Length: 90
Image (tube, rainbow, N blue to C red; front, side, top):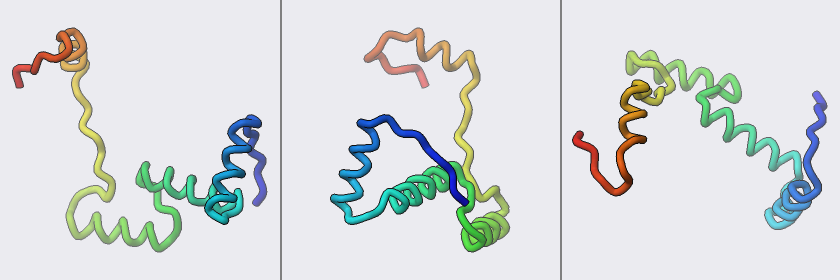
């Protein structure tokens, strides 16, 4: 499947230089970047990754992807209002 992505001139020249330095094509750089992005968000890239995540989650009894802990809004406001350099009372 072909899709078009628009880059500004500066970004495109830097990507071309990176590809040249690493002896890789722009397609290989894009494949690596998108695989890293999917991995970061816990999305399996192919069937093998999906099965691996499924087996890991089933054996541990927990979700395959650890979710970040969300602070309540009051805790975020409290920490933002404290002066920098002072340790919180936790």
